[in-house]
Length: 399
Image (cartoon, rainbow, N blue to C red; front, side):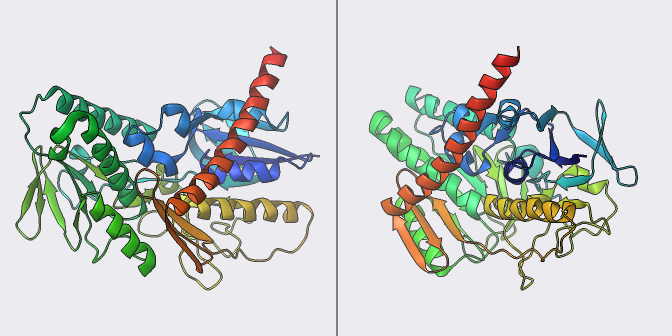
């Protein structure tokens, strides 16, 4: 009798789990997501700045799942509750039974409540909706500059948070502004980018090589970097800092923190202060050996106990492990604990420029790093679209 695996969340981890489980004919897979699409959050920097279009950052989940054949199903609905004793997921419209459950619901932007006005006056990039709204604002700003509607007034764009997402957005926007200066002239130079973080440096926790190369690139693009700077509050016009200074701004993106999805808050197992699950070494939550959590909704550690960064790479590595673990459990074989590390980091830094490290040994920057990052992204994107094309053809045949 086939085993039913239910996966909640169509992000990087959820999709990788489907890929690794779909090859087994004795497993039925159901993927549930509240959106009908997969959002490539790692490419948000390019979409926000207008470099990428919508089709570059989203894929249709129903077509993608159809590409695997009859044992993979997609349900476009919101998972509202989980009955762990009865082993079913309750969505808005139905109950879905499972033998094994993978929670891969990701994370959302943590608009810190102690910063007054932050949620009301800033955009996040964790959701496509918020990223799209910011893109529209950015394009409208460029249009106004082209029309010279603001009488050459300085316009300040702020990015709160100088981690990976923050520096990529800042670099790409600065590069786009520099490119527009060739068509709208000196008026483009009135658009200023401010990158703000409370940490001592940009990219806290990353290597000196990445920090130094990234800072040099940002400065060459004209990005104003404000580190060791604490935001106190925001209103319609100003960002107020705890050192009593203030910055007039046009709009702000906040990338300074995450918290787990709202579903986590309904589940009574051990969690950290941002509601991420704290799993055992096999990535089970609570005492449930048939329930796993992967990706940003869980605090994932390597074999030495170091917390892995909440990246697409971590989500995919945890998904691969869990797919392997489910196969082992079905076959009644012993498990080894999850053990993974960060293989490499590549940071897109505007135009054809990037900085990166592989295996902690290979260090590259500039055009070569850009080519390597582009190749990695292209292979991922190509794999998704080949599967979508297959799924689209399968659905046409069955109509």
